[in-house]
Length: 421
Image (cartoon, rainbow, N blue to C red; front, side, top):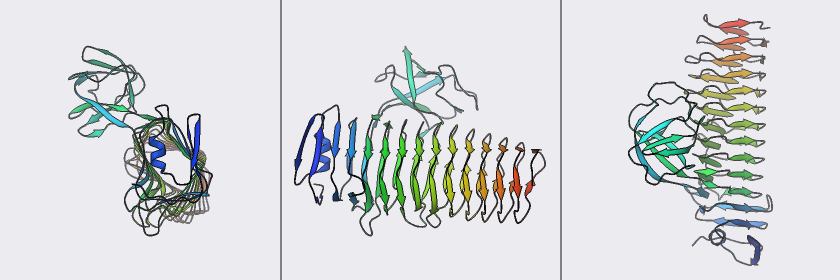
């Protein structure tokens, strides 16, 4: 049984029914909600949580009274909250139209499956290639004819059909919200704050994450999540790569208006068509690195963020990040470069300020081609203003001045237009 220290009364709402008790188990309150969900409202006070609070039903709201509602994770490894949908039916894909590499499929891709048992129209599905989800969002089934499964259009991006393929039905957990609480870890404990997997419209808002032992939020394989108006202070284990927010293989997630102070980075890993915007990051944990750390991903927007004193790069895109927009950000006083790209192509970098960084203002390393670098200001950096190692990039209308080394160091094979220094 979960042990909880309760200092005040806990008010719980089951739809239109509410009551109070002097001693109450939050997990039991969630379990007692009807099939339509409801709200568990927690008053001010401190709650010691020794096992994860698990949410597996839709339309659940966990609501505190603000920072006075303190949830303390007393576990070394578990999350305080686990929010989980599930995977169910699975079938092998025998053939598909997806046979040519680097093709964008826009018109109802068709898969021929080994069987279609357990699948139906409008199911969420994902394609697995030898155990790893490919670069897709969650797809919807448009129709099934025999063993042919037609997916809805505009859902697949740059898929390379190599090796064995399977199709998995995903039952996304819908409309769960956690808000208006403070989440922390007991002294010496290194559990997570919130972990969410296979969700749809999951929200975390107005939560104060303070000294959480490991990642404050981990969200994976989800659709349409919103992480907004939260504060993060000294979360994660210094030097061990923990993040404030770790977003993995999500589609259309919004991470906005959060404030991070001496926490780990905002880390996005193979997200698609998502937004990281209007966040303020002031210092990251030693060797936990970048202000914003991006692995892969397609069609994302990183805009209007302010990153001060990152312990590596202000923002780092790597490992196939493409067709992303990095715009209207400020990257100031990073330990290395303000904006850094590795093996990332076809991105737009525009209208940013990269200033007073210990490395370069903007650095495109080998494998970064066909990017547009436009209308940026790079100034007072201890390295170069704009440094480009690979070819095929367009560098135009930038202002680069007062950098300690060169204002521009651009390898041949790139195009430069109307830059100032």
